[in-house]
Amino acid sequence: MPKPTRRERRLGKVKPPRRPFIPQATPPRSAAEQVKDERTLEAAARISPGEYEYIYKDLRRIAILAGIMFAALFILSFLIQ
Image (cartoon, rainbow, N blue to C red; front, side, top):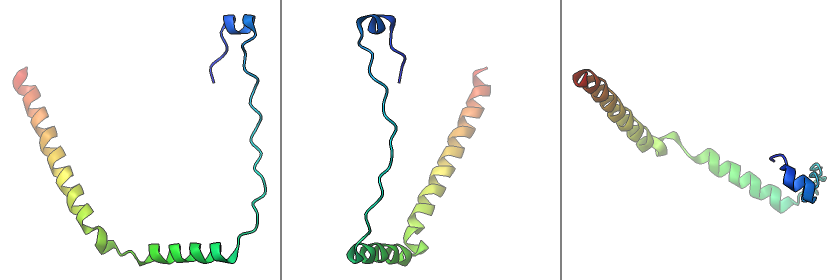
């Protein structure tokens, strides 16, 4: 939060300081919410790395293209001089 300007201080437009955030105690969770969280964790555990194989291929392709572009820029920098 920026400092108030001289004009704001003179005209009394200074905002009051914020009160600190004090977290409240969380209420106890119901059994239904706990089961829902367990199901979500089980679903996340069932995802196998094989399902993301296409990501590795895409990242490899991006890395190769970036390397080619970097090499082209490097070579062109010498040709321009």
